[in-house]
Length: 335
Image (tube, rainbow, N blue to C red):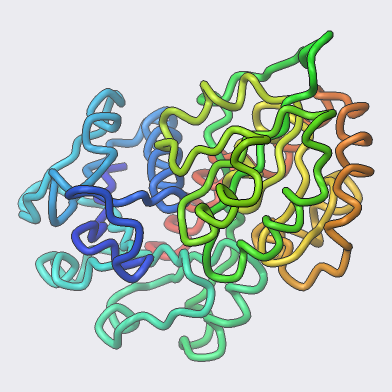
């Protein structure tokens, strides 16, 4: 299948223009979703043309050009055959340049954000990646338009780190953007981590970064951004990860025991808890567990079986499974 993926990157519309660095943006979750989806689609035998509005602004232009059967361009010509359009944020004008008869699916990143009337009229399905998103999108979209397909990560991009570090302080990575209310929970997590027993890394852009620097900068390693295609190199050195969303998914794909924290504190992600936590994209939203219990959870995580963590990711968090379900959906739509 020939797939054209439309995404607006100039102005970083998904994040309302925040996180600018030079002429690019520290955009993590959206970028890692696109990278993993394109890789999984190409591995599945599809050809993907990614169309952006600003090649220089898009941080993945070089990385995606290394993927076989993928191309990146700022040309929106519809002359090349397209079987399916995937429509991301900020792509309304690009979408209007393609024939109405070409099937289009909207990729919904922001659970509560409404699409424009034109996108609602044009897109046959709206792919929601959590039950929460499905509910919120269903409140305004026509019946049967929103569908649930849980997102996943490219398991081939994250080789399993099977052995934890022995004879050293365990390495714990706290990974999550420190804004939009998440900095409060992440701050409490860092406060209650034993920074003498553990070697703590904190990774995340946003206003909360400097507060973390002022409070804990001499006791941990602070990093404000790592591009998504560099993340496997960092994760391979970690023993436990505290994260949310795709950060948590990537850690689990690597086999690293992962604690869910972001908009709330969900504790260690296990077979018993992952289904509930996935309803809100592993963000910890609506979780009531006290972040003060993080050391208890770290100790349980250090005893966890890394192969079981990886197996849990394979069952719940596979980009290949996302592609399979999306292709099944396409087959049903086109008849």
